[in-house]
Image (cartoon, rainbow, N blue to C red; front, side, top):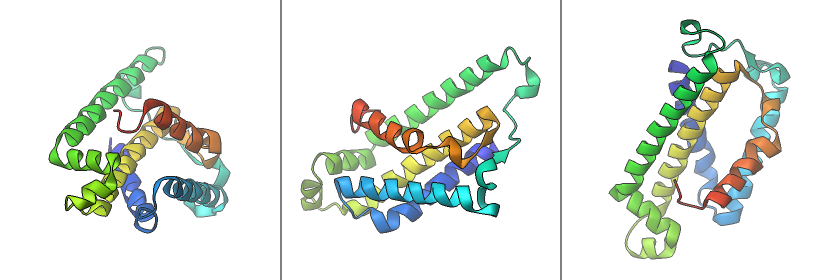
Length: 177
């Protein structure tokens, strides 16, 4: 659980660091910049000795409640943990988007110029949403790493780590929980 919280915190911090120089970009340019940063970070992780153990990755991560159940039943424990976490994140996101903060984000998504004309400074709101998304992705990455017991830069190819999530976003629709 500490690793999951750390993954969420680091995901949010990394989103903040990436968002500072790139978040003023619009639409496709923001997407291209974030994809480029992801490729750069993946290359650094694959080549730096002391960053992520190069291609060998980080191994030996313990699974949550692994010692409490039999190996045959552990897949059901993982499924239950995943379902509980998905429900918790869904409720968090739903509560956030139903709040006044979420209404401002919807206004920015629908028409940023109109939100600015209404007196909202949109860049801080976009940064907050970007950091929240980064924290959720960090949590998901930590859960994934603990599920498989290791993580390496090669596990996240351009297809799996970048284009598949973008495709899911496009198919699911912007603003759809």
